[in-house]
Image (cartoon, rainbow, N blue to C red; front, side):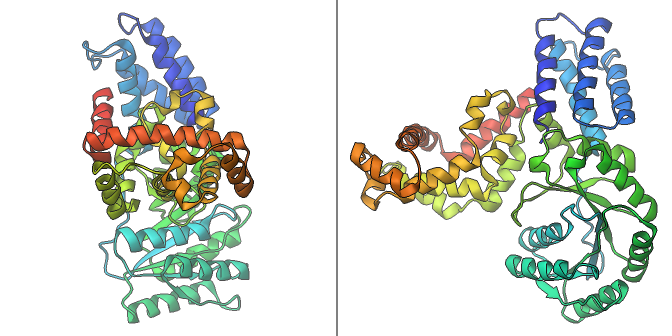
Length: 451
């Protein structure tokens, strides 16, 4: 997400390097480039105009720190204003209400609403330790009810059955009564979507809202629709008292216009980002961290949060002890690391959060895609246990056998072995310096110094 915008903004900053100070002329030129970058990212024109006006006012005012270079000064202003544009501070869910807390999910068909219900249920269960009940009030698509039942089973939350012959308000009311009897903390109500906004849809969801009085009414919208996403959210907000937005499919959105437009147009905060198809691919939205990512500074805090949540700490500790004792880092360990990366959303998601990653050459990024990670795992799985533990025995004949068994080329086996040797050296250094947590702390400190 934001790849194109990050590239353009990084260029703006680089162009200002070497300038003695910010002047009307170089600010004008830089803001023209920022304007083009934002419009190319499909940010709504009124939002772009207001944003640039605020940046210009601060840049030519007294707020610029004389100790900063022009590039640093402008980037600090842009970062602050991006954070302000997206909501200033993260706004989580209101879970303090008397249980069961009702969360109503609204949105157009195809936005990923039902999947988002399951993702949110999983997030509530795993991170907030809540007992969750999900129910579908979509009486127009029997498949939606069946889909939610399957997803509920996958994420381990309770599902309340419903039928297309029932009224949506009656379904929600019955689910709420059931949740009270079974002491559920949260009820998430999935609603029907349409291909477009219509009066029938709005009347139905208004009635549903009046019946269950939700604590949270979240609008689920596809980020890839750009500024149209913000306009649709605005239309829903006119009909319903929305409390927030869930922005989906952000992993496939290179522009990011929706994220930068929604708050300004609707006045409602983005609360979550859908960052992939898997049920764990949901992230709370932090405006300050997102601003940092847009400007190529990474998002180490989110990376640390994810590592805390998803990395197998016992396995990581065992690996550190193994390397410390001189037993070495082998291909089985390398495969385990690849699997841990997949748990954290894959190489693409990790790269998106690393400082300076936007400036990596395209060829380097291509080496780090998730399909390549899957191939590498297949290659390692095609090796014998002895070969995984002693990679130096893998010569020409073994490479041919491994490539045939994994459906890859011998050249790809060679590339994996080369990458493994580099990883082996890095793991030795990381272990000597105090482990991955120390490396993360160093990255975090580096990010703070940039800011």
